[in-house]
Picture 1 (cartoon, rainbow, N blue to C red):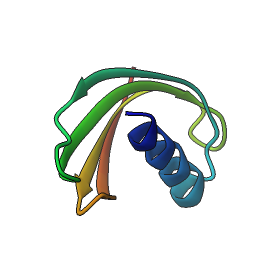
Picture 2 (cartoon, rainbow, N blue to C red; picture 1 turned 120 degrees about the horizontal axis):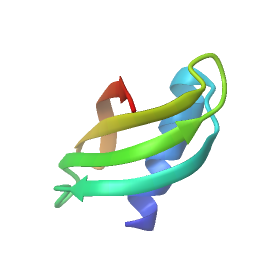
Picture 3 (tube, rainbow, N blue to C red; picture 1 turned 45 degrees about the vertical axis):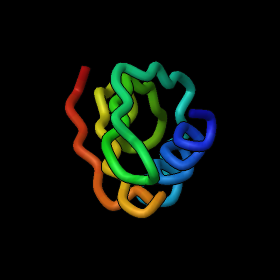
Picture 4 (cartoon, rainbow, N blue to C red; picture 1 turned 90 degrees about the vertical axis):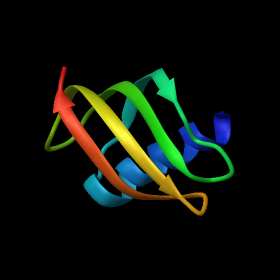
Length: 70
């Protein structure tokens, strides 16, 4: 689980230059490197605030993300 959180936080930093100060997992269907990790996050940066994010994993990497304001 810690590895998935680390990858999600790195993805936010690399893709959106966001730093995540809060990461609360709501649902995890990632198995064998594929699935969706859903979390409530609080980030700083251009899109600062609280978000509900779905990280889509394939082959152990995030390939997409959905986000809605919390």
